[in-house]
Length: 203
Ligand code: 5GP
Image (cartoon, rainbow, N blue to C red):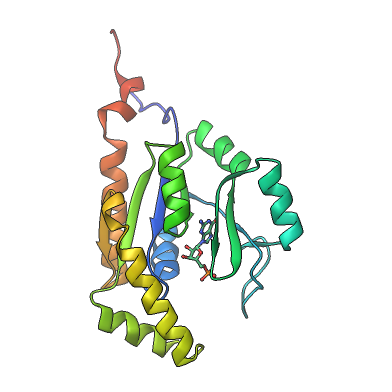
């Protein structure tokens, strides 16, 4: 018997401190699991060099973003380092309803809101092998001042305090291994009985 399509997609939340290499891990994951839909967030932050509208983010101004909040169009949103970031409700609902897994790359306040609204979401937190390594990676980018780096490290400590609210913890030492662990988590989640009841016949 051929496996039936999933009844409902999985909502996957990935968080982790700035500099942990989340985007690289996500790129590796999406390269291997092309069936996952990556949710492109809305933000009021300005594009960085190399970022494109509609690819990395939908770049909007504060008035547009506040309009989306007022109209209830966002599944979650947060203010992070002076800018708004948020996830469109509609796109995600449509994907999940058609059995497609959706991946969100969001910070800890947004993740807590997703948990409250969608208790079955899978929350994964990514950390570097050590704080020293995080600090090395942030300095290695050569883009930020010492002050900005110190701010990111303080923020990382605050974010670590939320790790117990996550379902899984992945250490990004080697990107390929971190991506492989996430794929293993997603496979296990797919195998949960509650996610497979549509395969059970005759009850
Ligand atoms: P960056 O400015 O470095 O791209 O992102 C800053 C932080 O915002 C990251 O931790 C990222 O995960 C988070 N982020 C990106 N999109 C969203 C979103 O839609 N909602 C929330 N809550 N956080 C987001």
